Image (cartoon, one colour):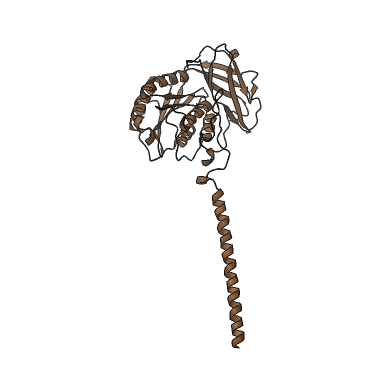
Length: 357
């Protein structure tokens, strides 16, 4: 009986040992699988989509991919809305034209222009206008993060002068500031004093820099289309160095929203050094894609001149409209050329989104 008890004990020990070994191997396998899953996931829950575009405007060199931010680290924007309706399929494009000295050109006719949609010339325009007194909807977006704190007072002074000079009775503006958070200090209004007071009060809302989130929100929620169907010029004037540390949105999201809402982005930055860093390239990319401009001032004293140029741009715009050449869903590129003996520079958005209704 003792011998059979010993045999039973040995078998029990052997079975228990084998069971424990199998359990251990199973746990190790689960750990390795989970580790692989988390290792391959995008950071911060982001999308694993393609990186941002690496060129920044016609006639310019390519932006090195390493210098522009990787948009895959941010949540993607929702699918684009329509930029034209199925019952009246029209594409509307607004743009400015300047000479090699940066001066606005105001004497062009429809015969001087050629518009390309998806690299194909548009055969005819439904409408052509040169508008000099369109109602303006302006968003003033101030970067109040630590990286620009040393020049914030000068930027506020220049921005106040700009709004005081440019706003007319039919215009409206709002004031937004961003740091680690995004805050609207003044909703859209025609009251200058309320705008001036908002600029003066604006300060850093939280720690960090949510540059992309601020521009996305400014385009999406505060620049509305005209209720009566009349032309309205929508623009953001952004005072920032273009750096971002913690936005949920990305560069492509901002460009897509600006194109959907037909918003031109004008950026100003005081750059005392040689420049050429990633923030400068981001600002250039935003301006080129939306049809705006970027100004790199060497000191705060140069901001007044930049604001004066923005005012001329805002008040002198060309508009063309035409039926879409290929009304298929998705993105369609746009390009404007001017037939002139002298070298002229066109500032127009680089495309539009369409979808089947």
